[in-house]
Length: 118
Image (cartoon, rainbow, N blue to C red; front, side, top):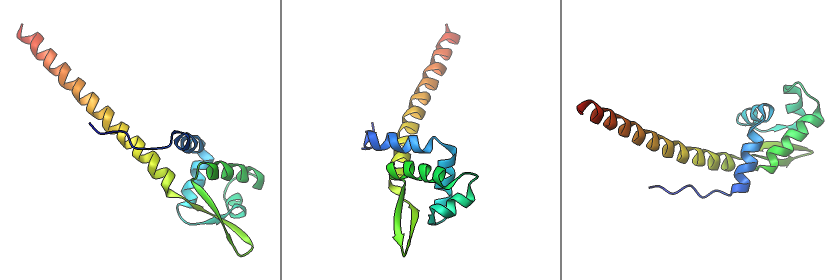
């Protein structure tokens, strides 16, 4: 049996918490296309600059986004590592539950066959 991937539980909690909000998921999707300033993001979402900044801080705390200074501006870029760790965790449990459900299906089929043969 495979062992669960080594992930920091607190980091995973932050990642899933950050991704629980549709605006933050949209920001992640936008950053997957390239870096952007907070001001640029604010023009792409129907909310104020301070509201976008709050969402960005949540993504930064989760390690999903990182600020980089370019000239006089701060640009945000996507950090894929936390997302990859979350994906590994999900993949492990997807495999685990698929295996468990396959075993249950086999058990039910054999039980049904035995009941018909009685």
